[in-house]
Image (cartoon, rainbow, N blue to C red; front, side, top):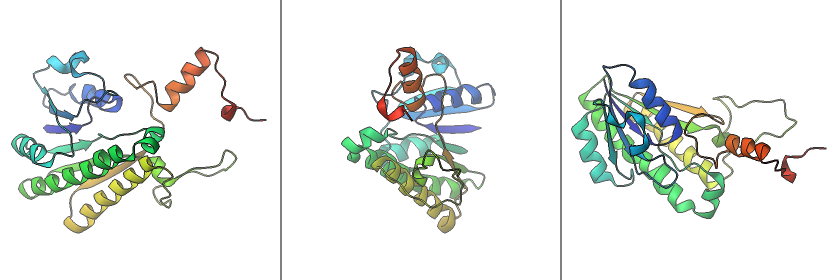
Length: 215
C-alpha cells in the first residue's frame, strides 16, 4: 500500500511510520516542512529503509504539493502536520492559519482528485480535543464527538476550521474521510514544550507553578 503521511517528523508521525513500516508491503512517503520543532529526518532510524522516502514541503505551497502527491498516488493520507502549540498561536497566529487551515484545504483538494482516480482512497485527519474548549477542574464531564465546538485560542480555532473543511468534503464530495480528536498524547520523540513533558520536567527539576497548586 502506498501511504502518505504529513507531519511525519513529529512524534506521533514518527511512531506511526515505525508501526506501518513493520509491514513490508507498505511504502511510506513522509511530507514535512521540517521546522525547528521537528525531529530531523537524518536522525531517524527508518530513514534508510527502502520503503521510506522523505520530501521537505510546506503544505501551503499547493503547486509543488500537488505535483509530488499526484506522482506518488497514495492509497491513504494520514494528515498529521500542524502547528500545535497554544501559546505560540497567540503570539504568531498567521503561521497557524497557513499551516493548519490552508495546508489542510490544499490536501483536501488534492485528495478529491485522487479519490476520483482511486475509489479505495481514504483520508484520515488528526485533530485535537482543543476544538471543544475547556472543562473546569471540578466538572464531572467529558468531551464527546457530539460536543459543541468552542475553540479558545488561534490554534484550536485553526484546527476547528480544518475539521469543518474535512467534514464538508465528506458531505459535499463523498470523500472517504475520518477525523480523530486526540487529547494530550505522550510518547517517544515528543517535543519538550508539550504539556506532559513539561510536567515531568518540572517534577524532576522540582519546579512548582502557582497555577498548578490547588488549595
